[in-house]
Amino acid sequence: MNRWLAIFLVVGVLTGGCWWFFANYKRVEFEFTKDAREVVILRNEVEVGRFTENASFWLRRGEFEMRAELENYTILAPIFIVEEWTTIDVDVIFSDTRLAELLTDETSERLEAVFWRNYSELVRDFEVVERRLFLRGDWYGIVLEESGVERGNEPVRVRGIMQRVSGEWSIVGEPEVLLTAATHPEVPRDILRKINRL
Image (tube, rainbow, N blue to C red; front, top):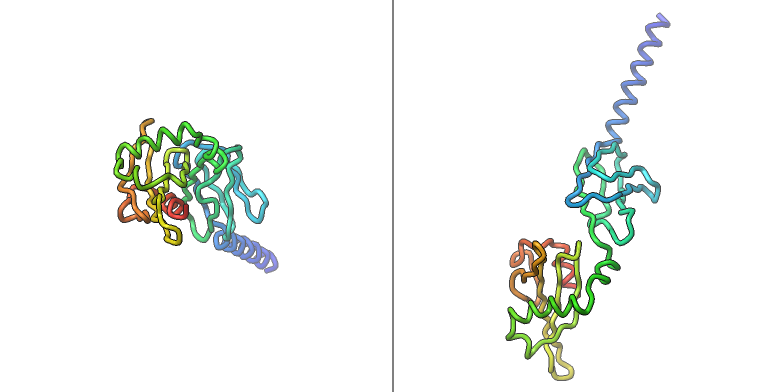
């Protein structure tokens, strides 16, 4: 009888352990959206995983962070929460420092020339006050401010966006005071938010 009790206890412990594991750990698949880079997964600043190609891990429920391990790169959405089995898109992009380095005066002048060529009617009344590259340097946001506004009046700001496809820059949608997903559905929402904050 003691033998049967021991077997029952061992089976019970193993079953309970399996139940606890699957209740608390979930399989998470990581898929790169573009070029793969070295990425580290952290929980409370402690490394729990590292990968350089599409991979999957068993992670305990909770909040995690991804970090690109190469200088000049970052992750578009670095924080994620594990609750169920899921797939995480890993979008490695240039860091703000790298994007600022890429946006030289020459690059700005070339991009602004494309913009002014298409919207020559704005040249007389507006001047460029902000410009920035986004993601992998393939999106460009520009903010124009109404010039010659009387003191005490708020100048009108107009925002535009350009995208580089196959090495060529083109304007996406029409310039607006506030860029929206409805009028610019092809533009990632994060970029729209960032340009609207400029």
